[in-house]
Image 1: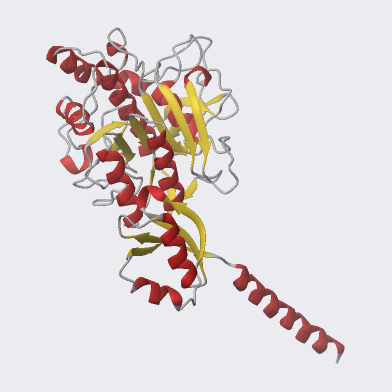
Image 2: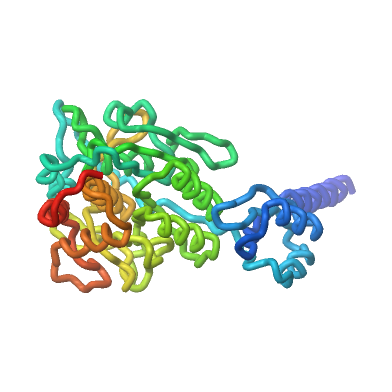
Length: 388
């Protein structure tokens, strides 16, 4: 009899545990309001429907709200004329992974093969990114890395923990391709004199959400950055992310994003899929599309993204691959162009695409072609240099 009683009790405890687990599970929705609605008004409206606000997202006139899966009030809220949209706080992921190969650090500095491939070093006599603020929305940055620290101007953390340290390494790797110092050690970036504004919106597993990305974009806008690197992607169409991208584009911020590592046709991820963003595919040393690189009509340009050596967490260096690694080459190029002359975000995009080298690949895979920093900078100099 006792074994049956124990079994029954264990089943009850298991069921209760499952119930407790289910009750503790939180679900979040982004509630977007029609433009012009005041923050206090949004709070009052949501509270009247019994919906708890976790945080305000002023950049997109929205709130991140905690809701129960069975909340009937959410349906009623969606019918309110002041509401523009209600959507899940979709998960976004970084688009780069370690290659598993060892990066052999030489005694002196080396120019990474990707930086050479896009001919960035040929432009350094004319410009190195001076005075250009680059926002990097990623897993954070190694603040004390000897190859980056002098270029880091400000950092921020928008995760709940408010951590700003790069506990993944991806963000530091991206930063190195953009702006590793020309200092006789490690590697050198495409634009070695830019100012880095790094915001941690992704955790140690490389996962973030629409709400953290929106907060990060808002911080970048407040810091008056000129270019934003987004080496991440999300499959889901998001109204909140769309609003955020449009806001920064209207404020003349150059937006650069990874096309994605889906390796399929018509698989470009958001935000790269938006027309305001420069969508970057990845190539290898032989100027072939990387087998993981997403393709589609939204691809604007292609850049090196296989076995890219760059800075990593804890003062280290590592080889990584992904459209995440291709994207910062283009971000660095945009910074070099802007250090020569201030122009609109659309004009920067046009310069980079018009000077890209056609690799003879389908446009869905290469866009305008391989990034050519030397030609882009030469094109600006021919037009006449204007001090920014």
